[in-house]
Length: 126
Image (cartoon, rainbow, N blue to C red; front, side, top):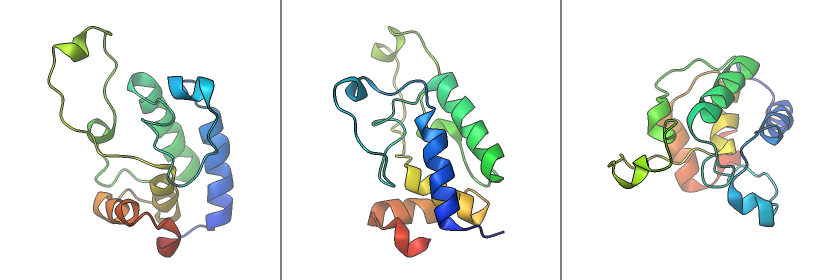
């Protein structure tokens, strides 16, 4: 089911504004939310907060999981000391634009979303 992009974007912004763990950078500098906003680097989503946000997102927009893999985008909850001693796999970037596209299409398709993100031109795919 294809949904209206403007309604999706406005609803997605409201959902993103409720994220409780805005990154440390957000304390000093408030950036407007755009399609290029990175959920991890810009909004500080990790662990349980990221999992909860993505569940709310999927439920709110009726997005089927498709080939979505939480660990490809987010680090799990962990003690502050562990990252120094543990090797982690490089994470993919996840942006608000990718969430908007998946919501519009109703399913998470990693390849399609990665192409849109890499071209930095979500509007072409909307």
